[in-house]
Each structure stands twice: as C-alpha cells, then as structure tokens.
Length: 100
Image (tube, rainbow, N blue to C red; front, side, top):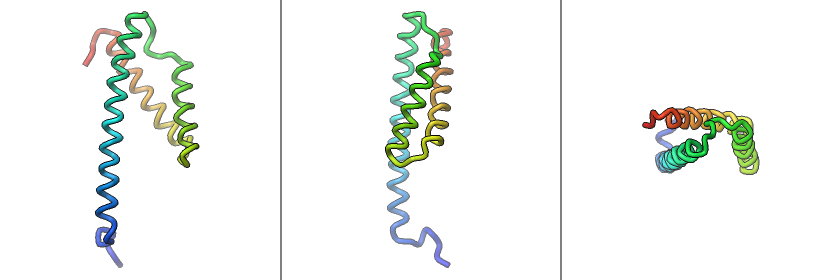
C-alpha cells in the first residue's frame, strides 16, 4: 500500500492548499478590519451591532454564492453565520468602548 505522501503530486498540491488557506486568512483579517470600521460608523449613528435583516442577508448571500460555485450552501451558510456572530461580538466590544 502506497503512503499518500509518496504520491508525486501530493506535496505540490498540499503546498497550493496551504497557500490558499493563508490567502483565505488574509481575506478574513481584511474583513475583520472592515468590521472595526463598521463598528465606528454604528457607534457614530447610535446603531446596534446586530441588525437582524443584515445578518440574514449576509448569510443568504454566502449561501447563494456557495451554490453558484458548486459548494454546499447549507454548510457555507452555517460557516458564515458563525463568522457573522463573531463579527457582531467584535462590534459589541467596540460599541461598549472595549476595542482590541
């Protein structure tokens, strides 16, 4: 039985996946910075961190984009809902004056 690491293309494929993962992390960090800016705007406008219609819109958009790209929309919707909840928690920290 062949070890998967002995397959010639696997190391190169893994390197590409690792690079893509790093790029996804950079994009998530960029998104986080935008959430910080959203919190500043919300504070100035006296808006809450959670705006229910926007939460649902963001999750629906992610699910739709997932389906359009051959991904499981329920899985991506679940992941995005977690991402949005984390963003709301981040905004709440800023709105309470406890920014990171």
